[in-house]
Image (cartoon, rainbow, N blue to C red; front, side):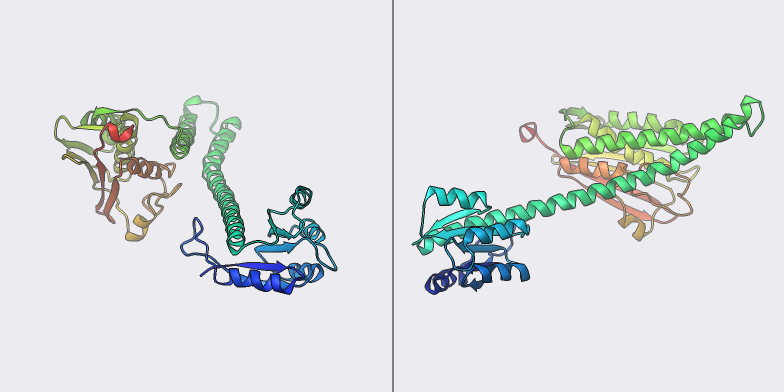
Length: 379
């Protein structure tokens, strides 16, 4: 059981012992904590001892008497503030007045407890302080985690953009120096490679915008009854030229029509990612088979290819951001590494799931199951 460390600073022995007795077995249920939180109690008989203990040990909460010998409660508060000690203070005093409360609050006290107080009043104030303390630290930890994730994200993005930018820069330097002579046609391959690299960066930026809109909730969804096979055919048309160049056959196996309540743009993203990967990671003269079916509760999508496949270790890395499988067969295949991550988030909108079956040098099958939702469920 987790415990918050509490320092009771009071020159009255009876007050210290009574307060400690109340809190010793007191448990508080706090949001975000799996088990109730207890209290580990320490005592200080005057302000100077309290100051020394705060300087040498860590406490979460201090119950601080306003009137004490050596150092007053307000002077101890000054030390806490000046030393930036991470602790929450509850001021205790027999001189309950607005002036004292305002003075203590200005000096950093979280709350105020007037003597004499009942065990219930003590528990109430301590519970309130504990909730505030835990919530504040959870928010701080979350903020730190967000900063860390943002830093990692920017680092990966910079790395992913650095390579194509360097390639385009090299190509432009070749053009500038006229290394192939004065005949323009000799530079066609350099221009073509530059355009390919620029297109890759453009796709990465578009994928990033999609990912940002989805995660921030700013992507506007238009849910209507749509015909899924028509969207699949549209995606096939997009990659038909590339597939034809490599003699890859794409076949759609579908009930006609297949109606499903969904956002057309989201369905396009799913099919574009699945078919694009099936073509890019396929073998020349290979096949891509797309299956669509439905029942009363679900929509079933399956895209299989006869491509290079993946090892179990490679398959485990899928769906992460900027993740691309890199081996001797894939090092020349371009991509943002964001498509499957975006697709997974969209599938979650439909309470769906994605299964992947793959065998190295045999092929891969992506199976997507989406739950059929009604219009009322999406309002």
